[in-house]
Length: 119
Image (cartoon, rainbow, N blue to C red; front, side):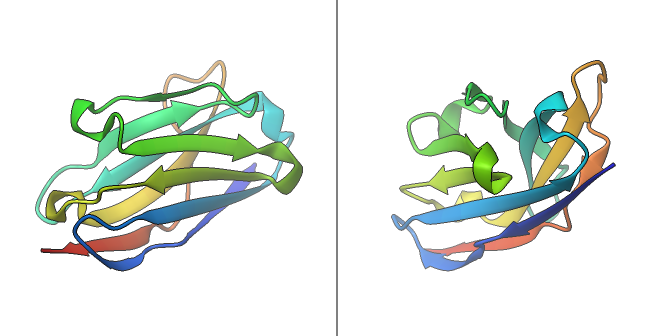
């Protein structure tokens, strides 16, 4: 059982930066892979990327590569999503999620944090 809590969202102007945090607690966290997702208004949720507690992470969306970076800090039970050069189209609710390494889908989800980028 894993519980997740995102923070760090807010309103930012285009070109600005935000860092989202996801605090995880519960079972042995090293047994889980972590992911970041987002859902823009009127659109389906999409996967931003995934990261392990050892630090290896991959951004899935081409338009985010070079602007978004994921990191993890197991001592603080926290994964981060650093977002730079934000664009209005990055607006949405951002979620972190966890899955066991043997699981194909993410089982545990946070409540989400709103990111709004103004033009």
